Length: 471
Image (cartoon, rainbow, N blue to C red; front, top):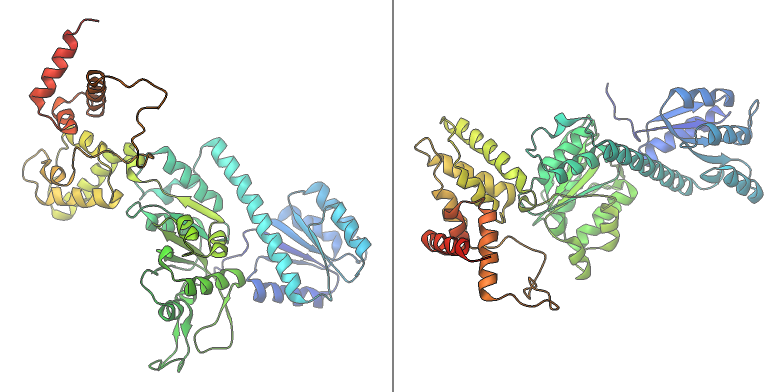
């Protein structure tokens, strides 16, 4: 049976007491979901295991025969500095603990210390190792500008450099157990990104998607956690929640920005503790799914208004991805248009129409508030009405207002002209506007005139007069 190993790197337990190794292994799996574990009773074999297995963290006893924990610690730090080491010793001595930390140990715990404190320390060490590995992976990918699994992104139609950087980042964090926050406007393809993350993670379980917008607190809890029989009126049988259905896979929560404050608390506890209680149950269950969330809202603005919890926000944004809007990656518009027209034609049993050159220029000057989803809808509508060889631009013209301006970062006051600069004359401003319109229309006077809101003859007249003016 294929079982997901978590974390992505191995945790090596080194102790000469078999009973302690067994009990610690059980505690790690039940308490934190860690099942990528190696055990070593003879400290002399530890270095060989580290050499041959993907060990990222070592839990090490100090007092052992043959090779002491201190000697082994020195060897690990010297030969494998990237491997973290936590000392778990029967000696409750401050001086020993300080000495081990100075030698390079990540932390020091006493075996008799309460289990919760030990587990929390191990969780912190695992997270630190995950972040270190992710940073190394990101540095390597960005410097080499490569994608190791381009096939995963084959359904995301793009040639944009910004999107390629997103893909490289996704490959870097795919092995992490931490949540991923996907932000971006509606229609940019957040669902496709969540599917790519799930595929890259090599999860054996399914991707389970839940749109949390509009769910009240009780429905949210029941949807995620499930319930036992008799938990509430009408609960005549037990039902597993989405978390359980996503076991060894991925749980995708869409529109997380619409979650109520009460439900946000429930989600925060789930992420922090990794446990949840089905409604009507007093026995916790461990979450065995990676969590991905998405929103089209500005969570930082919601933070300022008190509509989103800070602790949850910072917990979710450990890995954050901003999907650029279509208007910010105009080089993708011709590619997407070709793809959607071909797809629509195939579905409707028609031949793919020829795209007029003017159409791609017109689309490049449109803000696309609905992003990729809007472009797809326009393409399908155009193909459904298509009759001749050349694709008609009527569908697009009805929707696209050629006089609108593409969104800019300036709000309110028009800051095209700097206060310290002399204003241009009306003649000069008009010439600059015509020049920009012709540039956007790639020299097409018909399109440029529509962008300017004047007739094509009027524009032609202005251009001729400009060429006759003396230098």
